Image 1: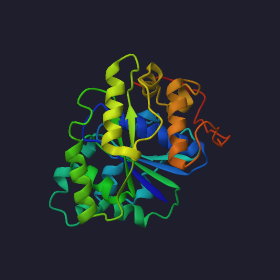
Image 2: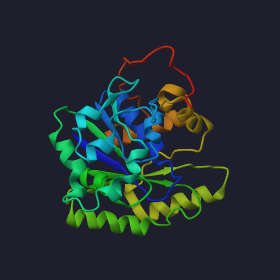
Image 3: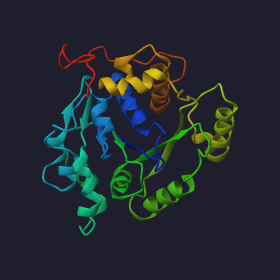
Image 4: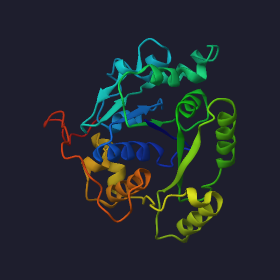
Length: 276
């Protein structure tokens, strides 16, 4: 079971978009995948079509040990993709757990006690370096860092790398940087190329070859509660997230992945319906 945390304390870097869509493509490539929404904004939850205001059990209940992780798992439209949802209750978790013994290991403990097997667990961490993110990083084998192709792209990355090193030294010796994903690229500007070159100089071979462009379809898909693979499977954004997933899986670029044929749709009525 490979566990990957998507992490960047800087907001607006397409972190949730990347976690959600890569999780979807892992599932479509036949990998049984669990997406854990660690962000109180719950955008990954609504991004797979789940109404975050009506869910009864969430990652909040798991972290407080009210329930086991298995009891919070919900299915999605993609047969092999499941999610542990989040909601606004998670906002208070960092304060409520501050004096709890072993608070950094709550999520890791829940995963170890889980009896369901997954090939991949993807953590969508919040845009901060607080307790929720630390739980994700303590539970993960590796980290994917999304970085936007915009001015000040490397701002705050020194602090993030310092945090990753502290967690590796004190909480999770196995933690490694899986890769760096460039996002929100706009090739009409010289800035995009300059930022890409700067990030490659900083992270060297950790940067994925695939770069995610800024596209309308990627911004529209969450409003319909669908990963880009279901919302606009032939769009540029879908193709690029499919390609970076091939990189993660170690498949050669330029070849078609093996896609699981059965995609479960919860109901025809919900398919394509915009969520409020």
